[in-house]
Length: 77
Image 1 (cartoon, rainbow, N blue to C red):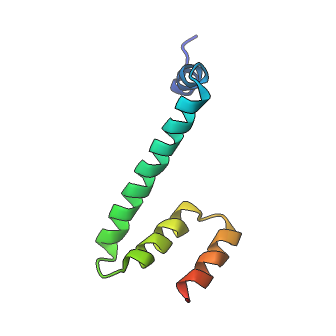
Image 2 (image 1 turned 30 degrees about the vertical axis):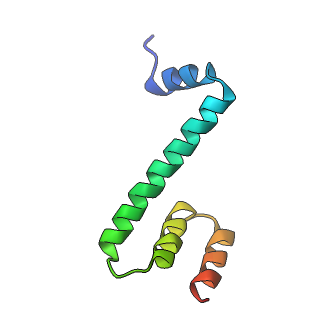
Image 3 (image 1 turned 120 degrees about the vertical axis):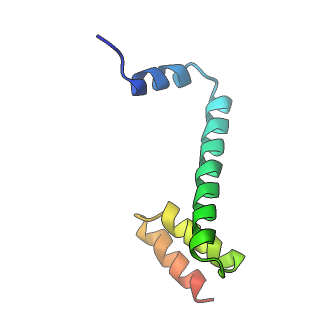
């Protein structure tokens, strides 16, 4: 029975040291953050750096209402 890509990926990373897995997680997060920032800057070219950070955080934590509430407060400062 052929293995699927997820099982192969999980097998490879389960053999890695925790430090390497953590580093990979940080790299992936930074890449997602950078892609979102780029896309938002293109869409909102006049937005300040603070507005960009808030918009990125909104998309990263879209389903977390507590974070969304904090971002609403931050946007009104």
